Image (cartoon, rainbow, N blue to C red; front, side, top):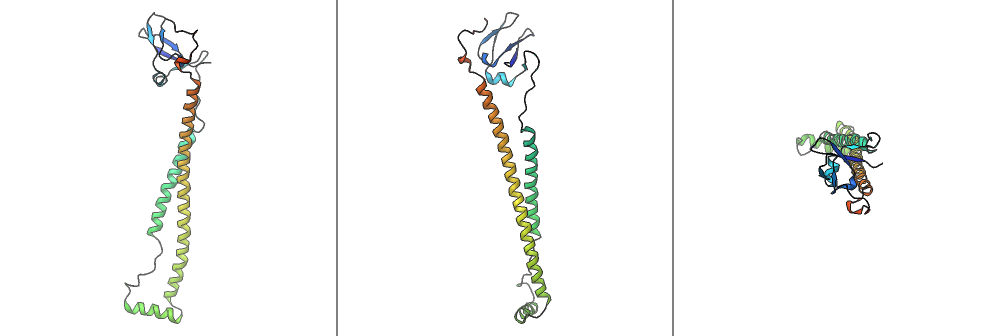
Length: 188
């Protein structure tokens, strides 16, 4: 079955043509001669009819999924970026010893030298524990962000590739106007 495209005639009727008739002249039942537009124009204003009934155009298998996974990947990438910013803002920090009063700094270094129990050492132990947790969370968020970016780019590329392949298949199916056999002429 060859899909036919209707070209409107000024008389109000439509003349069915095929893609292979691009650039030719066809005659309407009213007697007017109509020039069949180029393939691009013809497919752009396409009103296909089938010989028996209207043909349902096949949707690309990935068309609905591409948008869904693009949204998921893009959303995860944005959330990972926000997560990294929040983690950076709330990262664990040691106090700046340059801003401590001299007596407090002396007490801290005295505790380090003697090894006696003090809140300074507990603070350092808490910092080391919190810093390790923070590093783990940062790595997890970064990996999720990388996976989201790869997902978004991969799905976008798959959608583009499928669209390109469908166009290529249509181009291979349609014969160029000069490739028709000599016995078929357009009605004049």
